[in-house]
Image (cartoon, rainbow, N blue to C red):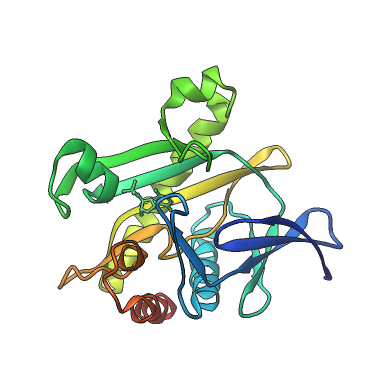
Length: 234
Ligand code: TMP
């Protein structure tokens, strides 16, 4: 497998073509952004930690029967993945109120939810990822109903499996964001699952172990990612 030209550079990752047209290399950067890239910084060794965390979680989910784009971890910062056509929708799953949900609904962060919430955001940097629902997806042809049924079904299963996984390791899965892609007529879980796109709280102390430490200037960012890495690999 040979890494070829860059095909896309995002805020936290670079995608490269390979000599196999069905496969890409995801390269994890240390760059961190928040609030639609109005805030920019670097989290030391984040790329290495996020690649390891994401690879472990995708492997775990594959073993549970979730279809993902993950093929293998190639090196510290590189993951081999299937080349999907990303559906331009961020799927957010919430178990406990936090972040924008707490603001929107006027509930204190940490309030448990009576049932899991699934939200959708249109992936658009110029628009700042506005919240949408399934009517918008139909009206703007973002995804087919049958595709979104599969996406939601997978997202709910991923939540069940990841909640258990983190719970066993002393971490609360508060909320997280997933992205899905089209691949050879099917739908695969894609992108990454890392502390950049999840809220992870220590079960006992409720200490934040995710990118909120960067967003909110809480300090000890690298230490939090290291702790998640250690526990995910345990
Ligand atoms: P929110 O409370 O800000 O809407 O975030 C919900 C979850 O989604 C949280 O775990 C962080 C993640 N997220 C992203 O991965 N990318 C984003 O652009 C945003 C706004 C949130």
